[in-house]
Amino acid sequence: MIYTITISPAIDYVVHLDLLKEGMTNRSTHEEYFLGGKGINVSQVLKELGVGSVALGFVSGFTGQALESGLRDKGIDTDFIHLTQGITRINVKIKADEETEINGQGTVPTAADFDKLAEKLKKLKDDDILIISGNIPKVLPQDTYDRILKLTKDKKMRIIVDTNGDLLINSLKYRPFLIKPNIDELKDIFGKDISAEEGALKLQESGARNVIVSLGKDGAVLLAEDGNIYRAGVCTGKVLNTVGSGDSMVAGFLAGYLKTGDYKYALDLGSAAGSATALSPGLAENHKIYGCLKELRGTEDVQPK
Image 1 (tube, helix red, strand yellow):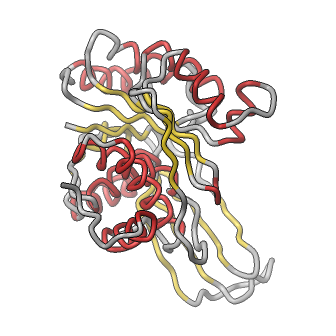
Image 2 (cartoon, one colour):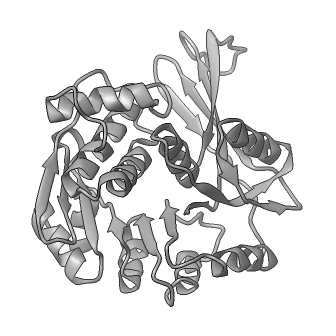
């Protein structure tokens, strides 16, 4: 089974205006809401691709209940820790002549709450897959991911770590199955301009089994565990939204790899999923992902064999 962890999930409330007038009452033209948080994004795109997962993490209050209910309505299994105080955060995104975001603080899990999560992680099996995504909120201990990864070090399970900086570097000793820095993050890690291929090799030598380097509009490069380098482009179209694009790439890659064991197909499906989300108002849907995959592979025959 695949498990995703979202430490600080959110409901994203998107408000569309013709023009934002500060200090005045504004009326929206329309609104949308999305169930958010990086791990939750991965679970939702996996579901679109026909792959099941269990969403782990922390929720609280009426917004937490709404988020959990919304995921279950989509057919996604959840096993959240329910906090006794506060509410799951709401992020407000105002889209007018300019885009403005107000991100909620969220509720801080206690040590006892983390103990409950630890008990769930201890029960994971060797053939399970654990996905850890995003940065750690400033209000939480910065060794949170390290504490989580230590619980899995004696298991043969595959771990995907999608974060950056020291959090990424510190995860390498646990031999993650996949990491996914972008090209700018590589420069920050190594303190200099570095090619995607060279940076990926250094990270692989430090412990990562597979490394995807996102190149933005130039696509992505994968240095796979088999020692080969694979490349994928991006789909054409107007970018509507970049939130969740990286999470979609992780979901697409994992779904493609699990269905075929083919690294090139997995990278193409990952790039297609990331592109499809960027070209959608929210997370990409199945038909959009496979439409992008047809473009990337130059064929109508894109279903996994």
